[in-house]
Image (cartoon, rainbow, N blue to C red; front, side, top):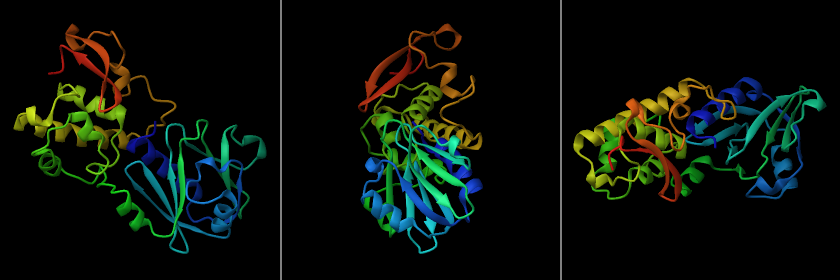
Length: 262
């Protein structure tokens, strides 16, 4: 599932292909993922509009239009962008496509239809409405440590709380805990001050490093973070412990039992 680093890569792709272009019209093949209006109304709202800028906040990508409104792209589990010109390059799971006045196209693909696409008249009001917290690339360690203070929930639940920290998802949360040698199920009130500082430091380092390396979530390199260790039954570092799978904060969770403190 695309998390902050992956959506950061989508933003780069979007900017390189579509920024500054004018939408001649929109073909909606399946409006299930368009959440706040019917397909024809969505197409009509975008027709003739120029894309003037983009903003990523956590896992959300906003495309600002020349009328001050925004097209919101939230990729869900399997969302993807496909920029093309020739009809034969259309993706199999394209749900809608922006047809630009220069003849090029930007298709939005989503095999499982879990994406959330919205046309927004007020981006800031929407961010406030869903209580989306600060972006994980825009915070510092002091902010995270302060947010942990007085909390009793699990580390993983904390990391996944988009109202506190926008952009961290399931895979990166497990990676952060692995690097800290802390079980994702550990409670925040069970952490020492040094462990809280370490957790904050690794959160920033993992998210910053991953975003800088522009991952494509369907084709990670073999040495990409969790690919190194996140296999059930695999021995832990230095042969200590074993990777197990459990549920934490309602999510499938991997950690190295015997290596990460429980």
